[in-house]
Length: 92
Image (tube, rainbow, N blue to C red; front, side):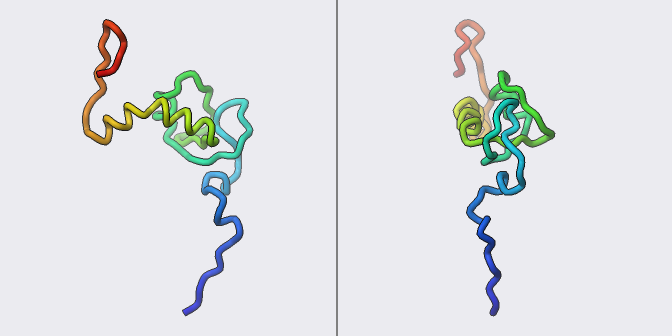
């Protein structure tokens, strides 16, 4: 049985292998992950995003997205909804 040859670029993340840069305006770092634009815009509305349906994020912006969307992702996994108290603005 023949084995296929693995290119040297196999250790490079898939988003970076396709080229381009981070989808945040003003950031020229290499992309690490690709996320749906709607989820990134919901979690980080202050970012000016470029691109289409999916946006490529560098390591720094991906970590910021993870932190900002932690509670929403946890509730999505549980199948619940997010309740925000109108009095204090905290999630419950």
